[in-house]
Amino acid sequence: MDRRRFVAGAGGLMFSTTAGTFALAKSDKTLVMPSDACRPTVLQTPGPYITADNPLRSDIREGLQGAVLQLDIKVTEPIACAPAPGVVVDIWQCDAIGRYAGFVNANFDLNSLRMTGPGADYTSESFLRGRQVTDENGVARFTTIIPGWYVPRLPHIHARAVMPDLDWTAMSTQLYFPRDLETAVFETAPYASRGPNPIGPDRDIVIKGDSRALKALTLDVKKDGDSYKAAFDLSMG
Figure 1 (tube, one colour):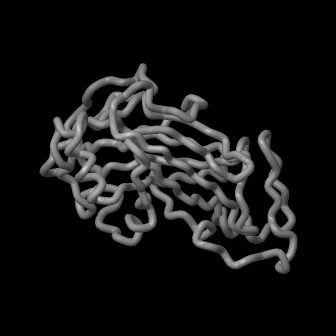
Figure 2 (cartoon, one colour):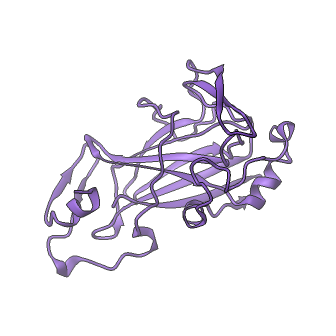
C-alpha cells in the first residue's frame, strides 16, 4: 500500500512530532478539493550525493560565490490542504562549477554519459547542504546559490521532506531552473569559466525528456535586487 492511500484511509490519525502535530481529516465533511499547492509533488530520486547529517542552518553557502538565491519551500499536508509545521526539509546541490560536498565526485563522459571514474574528493566538506524545520506557515527558508552544471545533469537542487521520527513519510524531489535564466547566469562569474551547459532535458539522466515533470519542478525565479528568489510548494501526500 502506498503512502498516499494509507494516509487517506487513516481518518482521524494524529501525527505527533517534536515540532508540531499533524491532524488529518476525521470525516468526509472536512475534506477539501486540493489547490495547486496540495497536488501531489512529482517525486524524483535523491541521487547518489544524499547525506543524513546536513547542518541545521538557513544560509548554506559557506562563502561560495555564485548568483544568490532565496528559496522558500512551503510544505502542505494534502488531506486538509493545510500548511505542515514541524517538517524537516533538507536541500543539497552542487556549487557553481559542479562540485558536491560530502563525497568523492564522479566523472562522466560527455558523449556517452557513462561514468569514467572517481573525481575530486570533497568528503570533508559541507558546502551547499542544509536542513530547516518548517515554521507555523509550513515554510522552510534557505539562502543558497543557483547551481552550476555537471555531466550528465541539468542544474538542479535536491529537496527532501520528512516528518520527524517518521521515516516512512520521507519524500524527495529535484528543483530545476528556466533555461533562459540558466543561460544568463552562466554568462557571469564564476559560472562563465565553464561555458554554457551542454546537457539538455533529453540527455539529462533523471528527466529523460519528460517535459511534464520538468515543467512541474521548474522554479518560478524572480530577480530581487542583486539576487534571485523563488518558492516551491511541496505536498506531503
